[in-house]
Length: 450
Image (tube, rainbow, N blue to C red):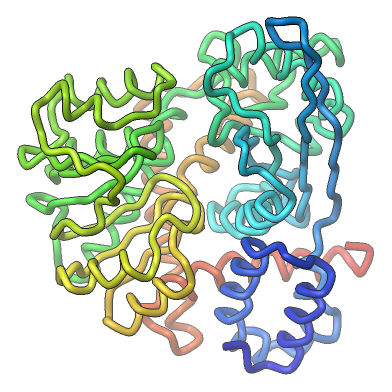
């Protein structure tokens, strides 16, 4: 509950201005609750209305995307780009192509991205974009035509020193390639305007694995704080896309064992672990197939499959949701608590409902928040931007080492920020505070025009 009078007013005004945008309301409330002691200690934040300005996007671009399908029929989708905050650098954040994309989800993701990017310490502001277009079941030609139409409008608003989008759900290497090709055609320049590019035209090594690798590096630091090691630990993971794949790959490499992955159809339980090269690579095959069914893993490897269920009913040492927002609800949290799980590491963006978070906190579960845990993806995107600017390419080992250091620093900075304001051990508050302070101070330095 928000107690500070100024923050209460900011939240009430934000709700009034953005009616029905529940995802956006949810993320703003979480941040405002965390930063109360910071605002109490710094009256200049209220005087300059830093938080009121911070919850309002600098720019919201909404546009029509018309394209022609393989049958010659004209289709119409909506496109979005939310340029939320550029106080510490050009807008940076992914593009999501999924039927659920709407203004609320774009604002929620852009707001989260602002603090996530701040935590990396790299010079990147916060932004997000996408469309309600669904690439599933579309031909390559249809995806290409859609991407070209989408970029025809988006190109007017982005650039390597203005706004650098990346991939997200529904936007992988294929889509990034088509988007980049159209941008290059329209602007007649070869720049690092998108990240997540192919290695043949400016992409960075480790980028596909980065979010998952970074999440595991964060988890390793968290476990160290409590005198524990990843070796021998069992993990429940959701999803089977790039994020889950990178997570499974790094956990296995460091000696842990992932026993679940999931899809929209249910989840599998692999007692021996998703731990062989064949099993881990099969996750990529499932994703590439476009069928979106985790049952295919159960069929191939002869393990139990639980239709229509989520993996949080399994007893493990660490839980890492890697799929999508609000995938872990109150009933899931009850299962987690009943199974005595001690560590809960959010890898997807805001994967946990408010009610579930409250229950986990009340039962002393250690919660690692998504804006810190999944910052590895954007961190390597930032490293890709640096390589593009230098016309240079680092080795996989160099990128991985830089990623590891960034994630270690994010954990340590979050821990110290929480401790500084009397909330030692609260990693959620620590991440919000550490991310907020840097952006707030930059906004003050740049004047009220921001």
